[in-house]
Length: 157
Image (tube, rainbow, N blue to C red):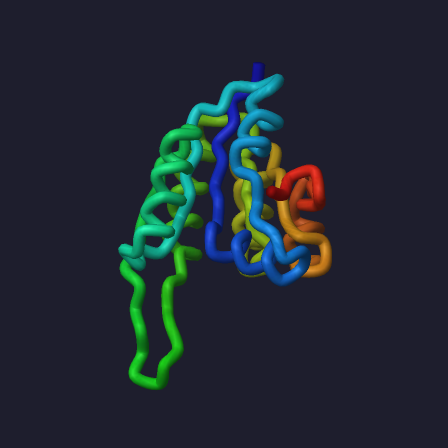
């Protein structure tokens, strides 16, 4: 049984599944699929703290499934845009986990993580798996992974 660490870029998964399918990602079904043959030693979901009831219920559901939920404050800029980027936090946590597990599973389509996957594969010999929405996942991220799993109907609510 291999040890797995899961990292979820919640904002990326939310917006890409909504844009591509108009549906939400099924975290419970994903968990069941990943944990079927191997041991999930850690699972972290990175989200933005908006402190509204819908978000709190969603975060509680993730915790109930088994995810640790890390929150960053929602920042509204004066021009109306918002900021809530977890890329550095995810990177640091992946680098630490890669020392202790066999497989890193990243749920994101963000091409910024391609260098991270190259590094952990080369330096730690871990297997890197990516789950992303096909039309919205960077080719560089797909190419940096050992395997790429398409988020399609079977992983949607």
